[in-house]
Image 1 (cartoon, rainbow, N blue to C red):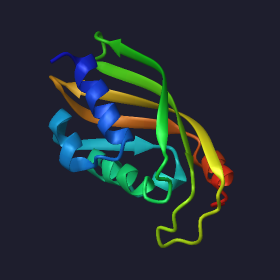
Image 2: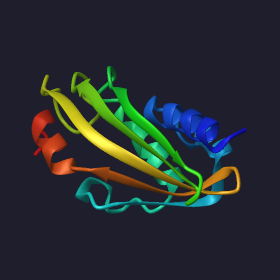
Image 3: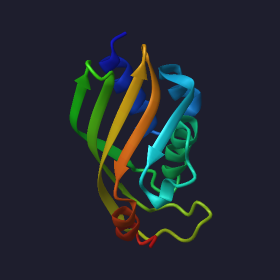
Length: 137
């Protein structure tokens, strides 16, 4: 399987809320995660992030991505995916009544590979903007 194929399959599984149980097949067991976003400040593993995404789709059940770009950098062993996340807060997931507000959030994943598996992923995302759109901040 190529880096591109692995990254595409991981990206889709992660973004559709499959969680770590499915996503781990494309990742090293101890894969790390980073983001300069307060909403993800406590998340340092890719396992934690994929499960966070799974949980995010509970209050936003129509959450989905619109892929804008997908690029492989073989020289550096990474793959970048740029997308827009769309969804509306319609379900009370224990944190309050649905706001009925929608989000349209740009973000980028940079997936660093070691061999055929992801060893680290960085998410580039303006969480403050997204939380305001949803009425959560």
